[in-house]
Image 1 (cartoon, rainbow, N blue to C red):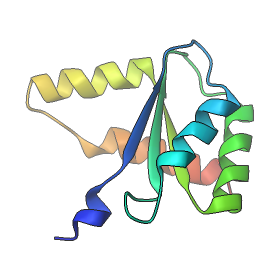
Image 2: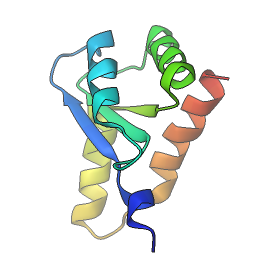
Image 3: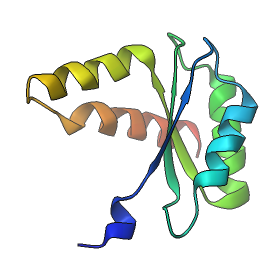
Image 4: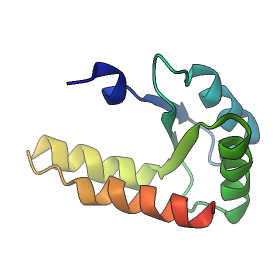
Length: 103
């Protein structure tokens, strides 16, 4: 198995909104060695369309992709992991939505 493909970076934003600097900071950690895919978790309830604008700009600029995960989704992942019922469909849905929004 290629360990490089398995590595991703997660940044947690404790503010209720996800600022552009959070997207930038995540990009600093995304390299060819670590991987070019990152997750940004934030406490907000909704992913704003302006966030997708930041993601699109950064994806085209540096070829690094990020997905935004709300606090509610993180709680779902943790609850599933606790009960041993992890489903990839949740993260796949978030990834698919992000890709559709940043054509």
